Image 1 (cartoon, helix red, strand yellow):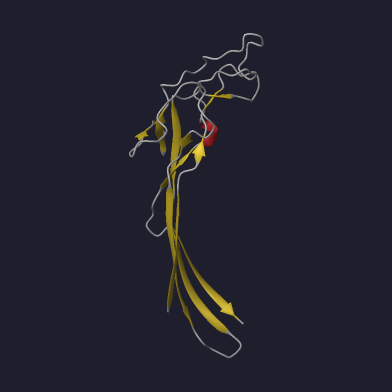
Image 2 (tube, rainbow, N blue to C red):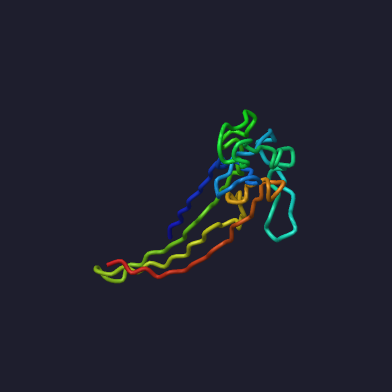
Amino acid sequence: MSLSGIFNAQSGTPFSVYDCTKSASATCIRAIGSAATSGSGNPAERDTPNRFEYIDLRGLKAGSYVNAITGTSIYGPFPADMTARNAFRGPGAWNFDAALFKTFSVREWVTPQLRAEVYNVFNHANLFIVGNETDISRYGYAPARRDGRRNIQFALRIIF
């Protein structure tokens, strides 16, 4: 009988916050102003299931920049108080997987193996930033979702 496991941990990925209020196309500038660059330890739950408010962005100025010549915000010169690229950091994530297996010896040329594998052993749901929704003209917060479920599988492996 053998037992194996894999532990995976990663820090939060950086992301940018955009303002698409005065955008003439799909190109948006980064938000203007400053806000806290890390989320709270316990994010506020929103009105839909598994949706959370990771960072409150109401301190940023949505729709405040317009180029005087073009009337849009996608052409420079850009204001000096724009948020930096990847100024915000998402939450970290961790996961633990395990496998238990037993190998039998039947013949010299064939060896069966019974396996039980568990993915996300602790059924831990990680919080992830919804990257395509970091536009402050649509939301006053950086949205995040919880994801993660335990998966169990059993297998018979024939080694020959």
